[in-house]
Image (cartoon, rainbow, N blue to C red; front, side, top):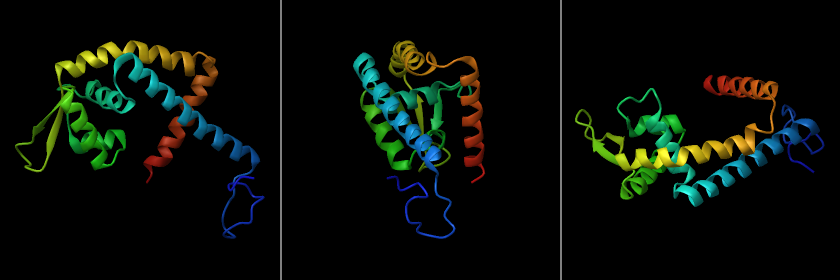
Length: 165
C-alpha cells in the first residue's frame, strides 16, 4: 500500500494525501524518468563515451543563447539545477578529457568560466544525432500530436509553479 494514498494513517490532519489515481500517475512519472534517463545514459556511453551529465553540460554550452560557448560556473549550475560541488566535479572530469576548459574570471578571482573546446564540440556533434534518434524512438514515436502538445502544456504548468518559488 502506498504511503501517498489516503488509505494510510495520516501524519497530520491537514495533509492532502494522494488518491489512488494520483499515486499511480506519480509513481509512473518517477519510474518513467528513472528508466528513461538510465537508458539514455547507457546508450550515450556505449555509442559516444559521454555520460548523460557530460551531454547536459555540452548542450548547455552549445545553446543558441550562449554565443561564446562559455558560461560562468554558477550560471551552468543554475541552468542545470545542480549543486555547486556537482558542477565542479563534473567540469573537472570533462576538463581532464579535453571536452571543456576552465578559465578564471578576471573580474572575480573566485569565479571561473567553463568553455567548450573543439573536442567538446566534436563530441556533441558526433553524439547528438544518435541521442536525438533514441529520444524520438523511446519517447515521441509512441505519442500522437495531441499527446505531445498536452505533455508540453503539462510540463510548462509544473515549471511555472516551480518558478514561483
